[in-house]
Length: 366
Image 1: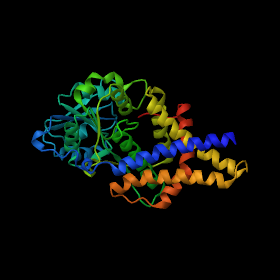
Image 2: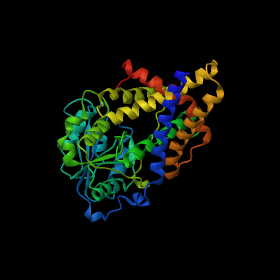
Image 3: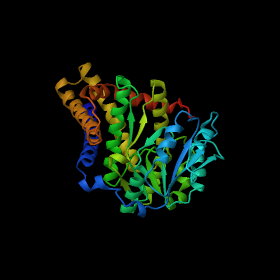
């Protein structure tokens, strides 16, 4: 019974955290929707940094997205991280004159980002990935929001879109992305962000330049999270832009192997966090999923009665369902109840597999 009480406590903490994020995301002041609507002529100079390696298949669409930005004083700094394909030459031929393509002097995304930051001359720096494609008002809205709120760091969503909407595997990735969007937006709007996405993020340039050591080169990924942690420690101001035109979309990962590799890479950087709240939130989510597995096992083997286990599992499902619906509804995407049910059934095991894979170092970087 002591074990079950512990499981119940973990699940209740999980439910409380997730539901609070969903409620914050859904009910935040209506004015937040307009955040970023700023006269174009007043926008500050802005550099958009993209660090990429072997992205030849994506740079055409990326160039089109960046060239079409409505922000009149934005330019792209594209940093090629030793590509072995035609990435650099292909994008060089398509950019506006004020943009630039440079070669990384180091290795890996973080060294490439540092090279891009060193070339920056704008007051704000936005960052995205070569396989992420912003709408035309993206830079305008992100910089406008930063200026309106005097924020040092501004965040907005990355929606993972299925290549084939008939694929359950791909739809589940989209549903998961909305759950992460709700957590990211909810905690940021609460003033204590625990998650962000480097595919859609912006900084006051002075903050970023002063804190490049915060990128933490010990870990292959996590430039966004480590900078967020640095901003939190310095009590910097955050802004979250919920405007639909600030969204960036990217395609889902096509295979389970690549998905697990990506998630293991994400999990691996947890050891570099020093913020107690980020660690608390991360472990609460992990242990909440572990507790759901434990509750199910204990009920199946008869250690606890189903009437005790089922209400807890139902509460977790409702919390997860609300987290998916809060952001998917706002952004006009339809996620079916069936997709969330399947995601709920497999997600705890997927989380544990990602943690296990990260612990044995079973992932690769480009």
